[in-house]
Image 1 (cartoon, one colour):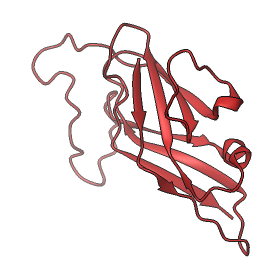
Image 2: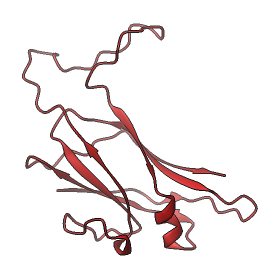
Image 3: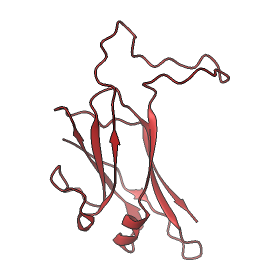
Length: 144
């Protein structure tokens, strides 16, 4: 099991323009190791692999990454190449990091009156592995 907690993310609160939807966007999610399930919680650092999807524990959403596994090819076989140009129409490499968007609106509304969110992710791998959750950025997006 791997646990990761974000810095507090500001949640825009404007009574004149209330949000209708709140998304978490995980950008650049790597999927070159073990497959895993990631459970996302809001404002609760004390979660672990046994917490589950209990909304009273502030469970917000979850996602599954079906990963590639270890690379068995030669040198640079699994290296993701840079596009040759912005007009390169070849399909992306199968290990190109992916983006994952989660709708967490109901979980945010269940928290009540908060102006920031701390995101904790518990990732449990299918094969015993500690470092499966790897991504480049996390964004909180609200929609009017």
